[in-house]
Figure 1 (cartoon, rainbow, N blue to C red):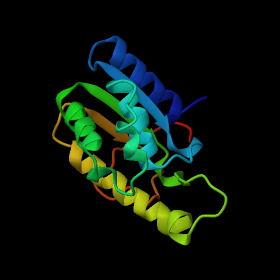
Figure 2: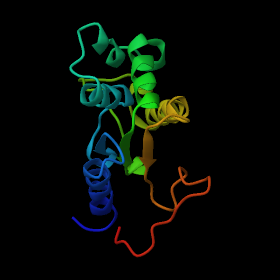
Figure 3: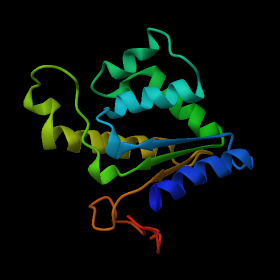
Length: 155
């Protein structure tokens, strides 16, 4: 492991042990097919604790923003010093597990909807105490507003 990934994992660890944040969480989007709702539940488990059966509703609905659990998580992230690294967003291709999925639950149309949901989550959490770092390759459509380019790291 070298380059950007190693740097970001070390950053989470370093900020955590130095007390800059209360905790850090690294999520490799390139290595997962989890939907945003599943990723949010993973973050929820890490920061708030094991969800109740009712709280797992967040993964069962098409739009997590329609649940109180989502807003509970957003509120917690706005109030606490936490860092989340979402690495490799340009290669994130979430899927809903199952035998046969309708066209709107798989492929490019679904990925686009999931990325819009991620953008909404980032907007909802912004302005709070949590730092969220989203990484993408320089030629990615995600890199459109004042990117910070890490020079000298291998891809």
